[in-house]
Length: 353
Image (cartoon, rainbow, N blue to C red; front, side, top):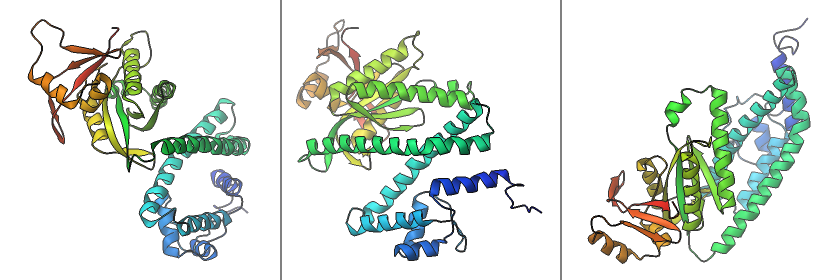
């Protein structure tokens, strides 16, 4: 006779157990205490790392772990011993791993489930069957992409050596205009598809012009480039496409700031990043605003020259914009935004328009 815990009465539980064995390499049989002991790591440290990775609390007497968890703790201990994971770096790095892989796993499982549904398979059994074929290939591909990005990041780091703890970058936020109203008219599936299409288009255009996407924040993307020129080209092309009624790409606005930023765990921080965000929040639809740093890099004007130009505005009827390097830079009145008073701001446009 079957019980409530029998896989016959609980098909979902049976598939989860099969997935555990398939993905983890064996059926969970170890408690967290046993994992810590076998790895030679204090239990408190094991618990802390488990939580930093984003996993829920497991009762002390629950056999929820495998030898893969022992190996993971041993590897972590090795990185600490080698000085790569210092106490200051450990929390941030492990938490970043947890967040990144949790988001990636959610998307991948949803993708596999949708594929199973498309071929008419039972969602539960289909997920297990597809994962058996897909997971090894996805794992190998992820390792390849990671190594390629390591090479890219390492090359940038070597090129930037000697520049100190900060790096000079052009930082840009790209924000979808009318996102809230548009999202209310879409189903969840349509909204996800729309956002993924937006991110894919920005990614392709950004990479082609030498930039890279740092992260997305809701309907907003944070993009960086080594040069102000590359970033200007990216932002202008995005706003141009968004303003084209025949292009499905949504209308966007952008703000660019240029200067020294602090990089940590793949993210960027500092006043330059904050200013770029503030400029985006006040930019008009289909427009690009740039700060003083970006203006100087694009126009080749020193700070003192910019001050003098502001003290002597152009005569009425004349074109207040400057033309430099294929760009048109039109100075606006200084603006005050949260955290920054009287910012010098220019509207960036393509000189050919």
